[in-house]
Length: 208
Image: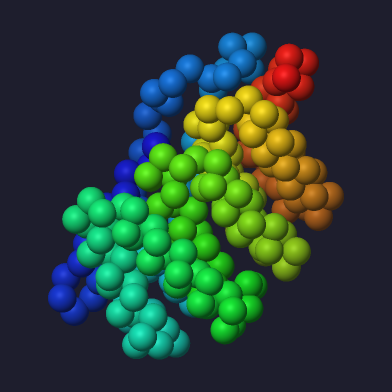
């Protein structure tokens, strides 16, 4: 699982996702398929205007009010208060979606933050749904970052512990990858991941 490092100096609060790739702590749901690798970097863990690697409170065009809220999210996560950080991220996402629209860069990054915090606090189904929501919007805009969002959703999906939910959301992942392939937005390096998820979904469908 990607490690989430939070830095919150007084002048510039940051949430910095740092990627590593340990083996999953639990066995895969279908032994035939093998584990799904956690592909793709963690999301930019705060609201930005350009999808940069770091989310900072002084991102260009970010209103001071939102920067302050990002600082609170940073501080909560830094202190291990993930439920509080998640609640604040959800509220920020709802506010930005309502005021700017769901496809605005700020709103999309806020949704990605919410998804990542859900993943950290163990709500992997919600993390999958939120990450797929980001991917769906990016896909509709023919944004090349959509494939990375689906890969992040797959990283959360593999940790869902309910076979029915695994099947439902696994099919959503495959549908999204099919759309990306048709639009020419699926990177060649993601083919193996798609194949592993497809085998796991087929195995689940045979027994659920």
